[in-house]
Length: 421
Image (cartoon, rainbow, N blue to C red; front, side, top):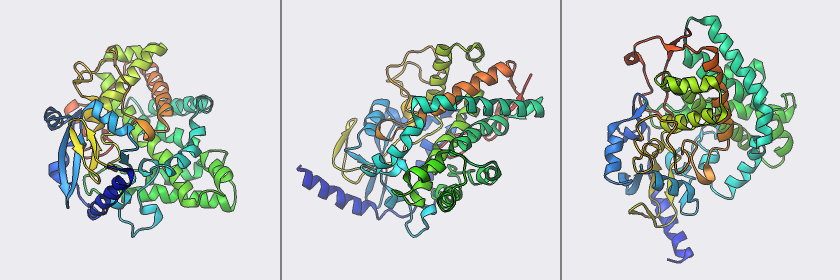
């Protein structure tokens, strides 16, 4: 098929796909990729993978939806920006809303817009820039540990540590004034919870996005913020981007650096409390051992359960299936990370097991999380400091009493009571 014909087929298929209504509730029959049994994917995800690493998942008004659960197929889809488009905003979001209410960001833009926007953020995540952030991360972590000690001997690690650390780090990065942080945090809750409605995540995202759009507008009118990301975006790129674009970029940094890291710290601690040898390795703090533990936690926990949806631009082979133009492809990151064809005994937490390729917890390819290395820095710093300050940390309730998110793009535990020891 010529390039022109492929483009025509894609546009026709996309026209059909755009008839998919704004979904207010995730149908129960297709919820299982976003559900867990505690820390583990539900059994149905593995059963689906046994039927094939790429399976026909659902159909909405003639649009076929595929689910990818195999590691190799997942990596291939995520890396192929030529065959798959990420801009699915017209399909799953309503456009009769204000800019702050609409979905978007780097994860749902294609080239050339994606490169144009990503280029603005990349300088903030270079090795040199991240190294300069280490003292701030250390300070935030120590403050959270002091807070835990002050409220002990039993505390909720989710509240006192899991959320405090990434929130403090991301606010420092954004240059968020202290006076605004409480209000900003209230807007950040429940952004990935799908229990009530499939479209609800876009509603709950509105608060933080509008907060940051307003902050950008205020900074443009009267510069007053500390020299953080928001202030520099306005100063360096204010002539090239409007308030909605710059606020959306800042919101993407918040989105990628807050909820996911919070879940990783809380769920990761829960896993580590069940594996004292890894807890001891963190306490000793040898760099190579710490790196292995953190990488295995990313694979094993993988809090982001599903990658951004992709839509096929043209017919393309994925695994042993042929995806047609306009088909939607969903990549299960948790399914891919637990693929037995990629790793021996993937249901076991084992930092000593060699891997042939890296984790997909941050995505892969063009849309890989721009803040991945910052997240790793936070995890290494926070978990080592936690293990050293509270070496006898222990769960302070029956494990059966723990409550995990029931249906969410980012999996988490609602509370983790721990005894400091």
